[in-house]
Length: 598
Image (cartoon, rainbow, N blue to C red):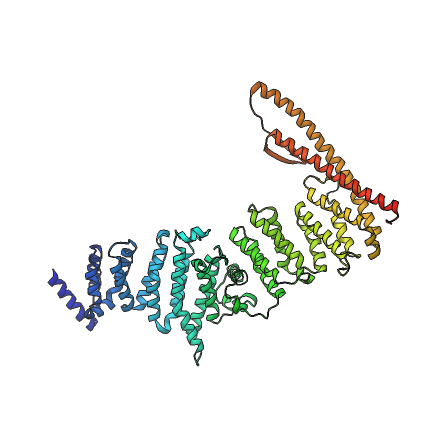
C-alpha cells in the first residue's frame, strides 16, 4: 500500500511540473488527506505537507483539506495542534484566491456556538492570505472584514463586568482577534501615506474598507457595551481595549475625528455605499462621540479649537438618537454624553436661537419620557440631574422660552411642577442686586405666569393628579406676595400679577369644592361598602377585592383598605392646598393693612 502511495505521489510531482493534474487526482489527494485526519494521524500529513518535494502538489491541491482541518481543530481533539500547523502551511503555500474563497465560506452562517472559536482560529490565517495578495488585497480585505463582522454581530454583548470577564459567548475574544487582524493593514496605510508618492487607488480603497469596519464596530458591539473609564488601567476590559484600538485606527488612516463627528466626512462614502443606512451611520457617530467626550479615549489628540457650545450643538443630534431608544445602554450613553457636553458650557450662556433647532426640542421631550415612564431608577435620577444642568446653562431669554415650551408640552404634573419651581428660582434670582434681567422681573414674565397660573381643563381639573403643579404654583404665588415691595420697585406689573392671582385662586376654589365633594362622596361610599363587605365576610369568610373609579380612571386590584387610603390622601392633599390659599390671602390682607401692597 505504501509503495502504491509513493508511486501516486511521484506521478503527482511529475504532473505538477507538466501541468497535467486530473480531477481524479484532486479527489484522490483529498480522500487520502481525509483518511489521515479521520485516523488522527495528522503528524504524517504534516510531514507530507512540509516536504519540499511536495510543495507543488500542496500548492495545487492543498486547499481541499482546509474545511476538514478547521472542523478537526474545532472539535478540540489531541491532533488539533498539528492540524493548526497544517493550516498555517497551507495558508502560506496555496493559491491566495482559492484560499480566500474557502476561508470566506468557512466563516459564513456559522452555528452560534462555533462563531468565537472559528473567528479566533481563522483570523490569523486570513491575515496571512490577504497579505500575500499584494496590491489586489483591498477588496478582499473588505469582504473578509464584512464576513467576520457579520458573525461577531450575532454574539450577545456582555451586560455586566462579570459577564465580560466570563466571556461565555466569546465576543471579547473575537474583538481582540479582530484588532490584531487589522494591525498590518493599518500599518500599510500609514506607511503609504508617509511615502513621497502618496497613496494609490488601491490604498484609498483599503482605507475605505478599514473605515467601514471601524464605524460598524462602533455600532456593534461597542454601542451596546458597558464601558467605564473608572476601571483600573490594569483591569481594563477587552471591549475597552477594542474601543481604544478603533479610535486609534481612525486618525491613523487619515480620518480626523472632528470630520467624522461634525462635518459629516462620511457623506460621500455613504453615497457610494459605505454606510447607506443613515441611522446606522448616526449610531456609529453617536458611539464615537460617547467614547471621545465621556470616556475620553484619544481626547488628547482632539483639537481644542472647537467651542463648548459648538460641540454641544453637534452632539445634540447623537444625544437625540440615543435617548430615543429604549435599551438601557443607549439611554445611559445618551445621558452621559448630554451631561459631559453641558459641563463644558458656561452657565447662563446658551442663546435662545439654539432652541429653534430640532434636536434642542426633541431631546428634552425624550428626557420627559425617561423621567415619567422609564422603570429604571438610576436613569430617572440622572435624567433629573441633566435636565437641571441644561436649565442652568440656558441664558435668561432661552430659559424663558424653554419654560414656556415645557409647560405646554410635558403633559405631566410632576415635570410641570419642577419647571414652575425653576421659574420661582429665576424670579428670586432676578430680584437680587446685580442679577436683574427683564425676562423674569419685567413685562416679559407676565405671559409665563399666565401660562403657569391657570387650569387648562377649568373646573374639570383633577387636583389629585395635578397636585405637583398646583402646589408649586401656590408656592410661587406665596413668594410673589411676600416680595411685592420688590416688584413695585423693579417693575410696573404688580396690578396685572394681582389679577392673575385672583383669577387663579378663584378657579382653584371651584376645583377644590368639586374635588372635595367628589372624593368625600367616594369616602362615604367606601365606608358603606366596607360595612357590607364586613357583613359578607362574616357570612362567607371570603376576602373581597373591588375596583374604584378615581376621576374616571379605574384603579384595579386594590384591597378596600388601599382604596380607602387613596381617598383619604386626596382629602389631605386638598386640605393642604386650601391652607396655602388661606395663607396667600392672609399675606395679601397683611400687606393691605400695613400699606405695603398696591
